[in-house]
Image (cartoon, rainbow, N blue to C red):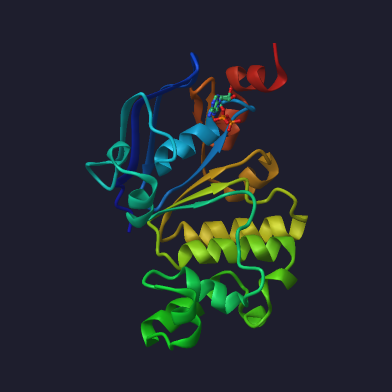
Length: 248
Ligand code: ADP
């Protein structure tokens, strides 16, 4: 529904590496069911912010609240992942020798081992989830193909599907369309928009053409903090944003 509810809330987060302030009093609010695009020049702190959300990096100070009052800074990466936060890195990490379908089954929660997943039948509910993901990622026709035989775009979609198999509430996606064709880029925009109907998504992206396709609120980071936020038109016409992208 139209109910707006905060899912992720970074409040005054700081992180210094060897005296260098990578994240500087960063605050960010992402609503449940919202997709947000994060832009900003190299070194702006985008990756460090994602690392802090997922627990890979601990902030020096500040809070990261998830789903109400769960303070993520108190948990390790595995615990945070199990709370329903999935991250997709730029480079796909699919199992090349397995079929699309088996990659998805293996990613499902409750899969105890490769052997168990591949040789034991899953319940109807689990099969339904696999079917839903195959449909959503439009990989159904290639379900029996080995991941190694997929195109670059299809591998990226499979990996997004593998994250969906873990039923996350929040998906963090790092430059999903790098190296994709125009058609694959459009398909990825469609997929992420579909996913964001039921989940929250944070996308770090350099490709402004793709950000425009997403048609979502944009946050521009610079020097570890929010420089500008709003529609892409608002952010891209902001003098301060133009200045950091063009250089002084
Ligand atoms: P972005 O993803 O926006 O390009 P990063 O978060 O990767 O920015 O980096 C922000 C700044 O923090 C950069 O200047 C980078 O060199 C520095 N940085 C990031 N991680 C580390 C680290 N582990 N050790 C030292 N410096 C780091």
